[in-house]
Amino acid sequence: DKEFLKKIRGLTLEGKDFIYQELSRMGLGYVLSVANFILVDVGRPSQEVFKSCLKFGVIIRDMQQYGLVNFIRVTIGTQKENQRFLRVLGKVLAPRV
Image 1 (cartoon, rainbow, N blue to C red):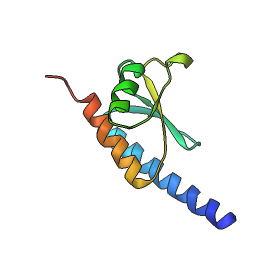
Image 2: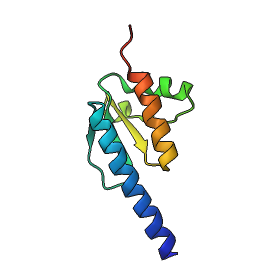
Image 3: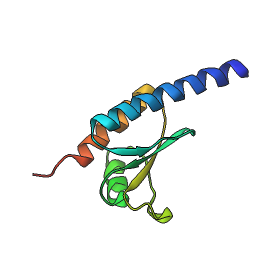
Image 4: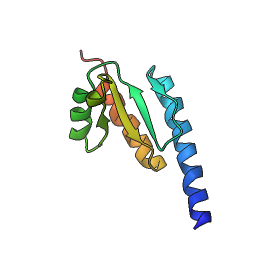
């Protein structure tokens, strides 16, 4: 179904651009991607970020096993899912007072 693939590809590219913008706004580094996921440098052990996001029901992947100790991998989702991920990531990474 070429039309469906075209639609999904477009939504993925839009979602990726949105996440890039928001990550930049948050001051987080990332690796530009040609896939449907992004590697994000969260500046702290990714396993800790993974566990904290999971408590909010957001599943990401920590990249520690690949030697990328401070990186997570997030799959591009729908706009609603992308917004939720970014909201939760912001909470998880917020400075602890």
